[in-house]
Length: 228
Image (cartoon, rainbow, N blue to C red):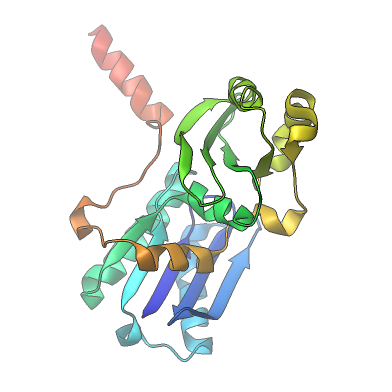
């Protein structure tokens, strides 16, 4: 099976082509540039360098959130448009799970997270089999860390936003907190392809972003409607 994987759900952008379980090509950047401008050229480059034409693809896997609202929409729109045009399935993969799988060999719990500002994070808790122990959620980081501390087990933390919360993690969990080096903190699109290969395809028009919380603008609008 030939799979194109796309991730624009956060600051890091990634594209990969995986052919029959082999990573043929992978492109990842962690730079402050617009995903909407750079995604299609990145897809084109990886496809060309791996000798892949659109008709070779059997499936598209895309990170469907949580993360940046705009980033999630860019990846989802691109993936769904390509899948519709090519008449192939598309699957949505959790952006948090994609990061968590970097810790698949850790003997303990794995906690991926993304900073959601104002002390909040998007997060979840996985075991070494990559099964959810605590559902993905949007929660205050301090509250979440006290929940993890109560488990009294080692926890591997993975996040592109580690610098924002590392001090608090170490203060609250102490030696139960494991924080690996930088390269392990970022999702790889090839892992999204790997996960996507095992999933049942989503009905194209039913595949929607998983924001975990509604955008602030929408929340304010709903609040205004309630006052009227």
